[in-house]
Picture 1 (cartoon, one colour):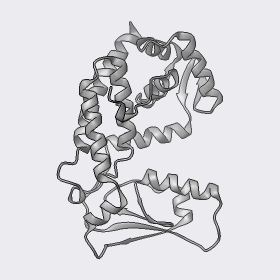
Picture 2 (cartoon, rainbow, N blue to C red; picture 1 turned 45 degrees about the horizontal axis):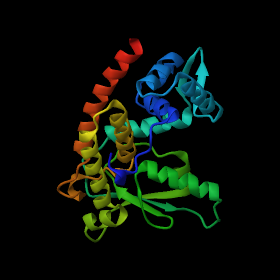
Picture 3 (cartoon, rainbow, N blue to C red; picture 1 turned 90 degrees about the vertical axis):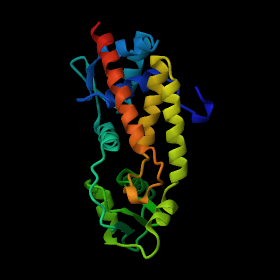
Picture 4 (tube, one colour; picture 1 turned 120 degrees about the vertical axis):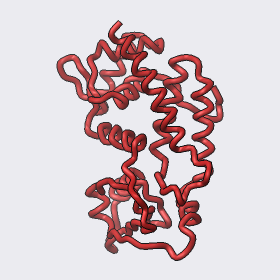
Length: 245
């Protein structure tokens, strides 16, 4: 596999987490997760140790022999699902703008929480305390973003495509997306395809989901979603047969 992609190696934790993040509802019996691990050469004991550690770390909750995602990871699953099937609307040319409100210093925890919220909302940071994006997405704003910011709508005076290019590294995102598509096409084993698919989902979380008018003509976002959807159906069937076998 291409070393330039720096893909994370498969571990028991990554297999469990990726399996549950891709499963609806995100809860499976321990025996099913063990069999998924076996499919990728991970021993049963290693999977069970990973499950115990993930419960202790607050990543999973366990009940009646099954394991499910906790609230933090349920939020990640929701963002992941949105990145695959974004709720976009017609774009009028307006942008949503968030400005940090108040003159009082904010704690490091507050600043970190806001930065994470803005990333989840797919806003770009123009400068410290100023965030914006085209108003083409339909999603709720978390409380931390409402409490810390004043929200406005407006239209930039200059070229909106140039502004988008300042806020997001569109060329870099596109190049990595094409590398991932090529890697998925080359992946010959279930383990390799699973590894690439997990990287694709992480990459889709960083897609700014801009209106078509602001994207380069060869933007690969839709192709990446289609190819991942095809792979997910294939992997789901493989996992189903293995778990039930």
